[in-house]
Every structure is written in structure tokens, then in C-alpha cells.
Length: 113
Ligand code: DGP
Picture: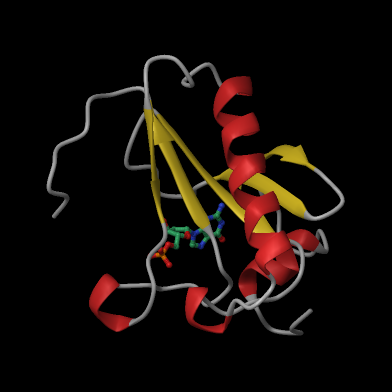
């Protein structure tokens, strides 16, 4: 846990968020600035700044599995959904607690912008 990390504070309940699912290792909540009809953030409870610092392969697997479970729960599994993990400045990562964007409910373009 990091004392002043925004997403650690959401995990601890210090900052309100619209939680949609929780497990021992992960939390999923709605993005405050959604870019799709369904836009969730799936995060590990443990503080990991970004994929650059992620070394726990088992935890990464749990985060991705949890993302798929949440997509199913949200009703976007069959229509299709997109995961995005922004890492570092060029990707415009703005919150340095690893998070998987889970987006669905509309058609996406490729390549992304
Ligand atoms: P990224 O740019 O990949 O680091 O995405 C960070 C996302 O976090 C961005 O889509 C907006 C979202 N976000 C930022 N602050 C908050 C917050 O306080 N609550 C929630 N629910 N989402 C937030």
C-alpha cells in the first residue's frame, strides 16, 4: 500500500468509488471519466506502480482473469470488450497504480489513437 496513491486510497475506502466487484486480490470500479458505455478499472489491491514494475506473474494473471469475470458480469463478454493498460508517459498513464481499463458497450476502432 502507498499512503498517497489515489487507487490505494480507493482500495482502503478513503475515497469513494463505484465498486462493481471485489476479490481477495483485486478491485473493480467505474472510471470517473468513462470513454465507453461500460468503462471499469480493474486493479490489484497491492500497490504496483505500472507494468514496468510488475514482477508477480500470478497476480497479473489474477488481474486479467478478474477483468474477464467482471466483463461477463457487466454483460459485455459476448459483444466484445477492450482492455487497455497505459504504461508511462507516451501512453499517458496518469495514475501510477497498475490498472486495466475494461471498456465495452460500443464498437472500438483499430489502431487505437
Ligand atoms: P490512465 O490514464 O491509464 O492512468 O487512467 C487513469 C484513469 O483513472 C482515468 O481513465 C480516469 C480514472 N480516474 C482518475 N481519478 C479517478 C478517481 O478518483 N476515481 C475513479 N473512479 N477514476 C479515476
